Length: 180
Image (tube, rainbow, N blue to C red; front, side):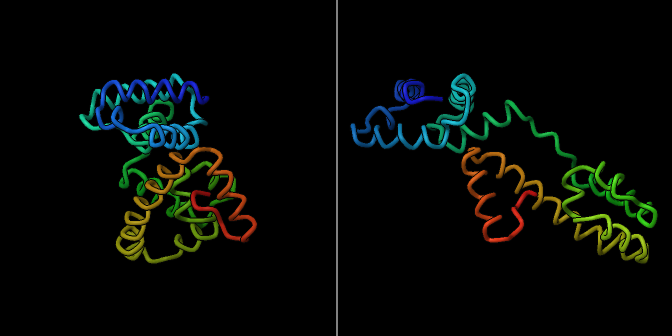
């Protein structure tokens, strides 16, 4: 989305929300610059549809977060498994864990792989008492799964330039990027 398209989106919002229409020139310029910086990586039509969706579903002016969330949902609908479905996948991996190879581990869903970290962890859990796996490990997994899914959603909402910046920063600091 370019500057002119950003102005069109804000003009549409100003026509529907007095709180935006009543901003002075300096405030409008700041809004245009901020929206362009935070939404400029998205396609204009996608942003426009996201704005319209938000206007239809909320009586309040949309925020950048609202627009990005709706836009990302439109192009990448959330289809993550429920925590129990993911646990069933993880438990199945643990049951086969003693013989699990790297190739089979790589076929698992991203969230389940993040929980385990690597195939070695699956193998270790496969040697653990079944009662411990079905109680302690299951509890840990269910709590951690929600954290992993929420981090992924938040990461998808960031503009690509911010994702790239944080990845480079993490590499420079020699730490593992959240969401990888």
